[in-house]
Length: 69
Image (cartoon, rainbow, N blue to C red; front, side, top):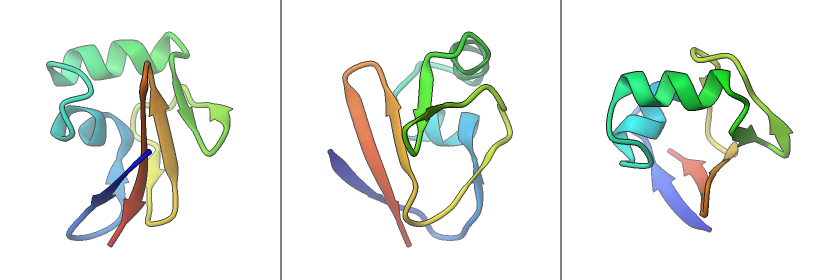
């Protein structure tokens, strides 16, 4: 797991995936979220605009990140 710092919270889930290069585009981010391929804090998350805050753990594929301020 790697720690990721954000400048301000919250950040929308699809933007986080894009900015951290977990996907190649915002469209791909939205697709993988709606397909149920992203896990937030141990639960499948299907809301593209889910607000992610410090302390949240996001998983997609082989990557797992923890959000920090």
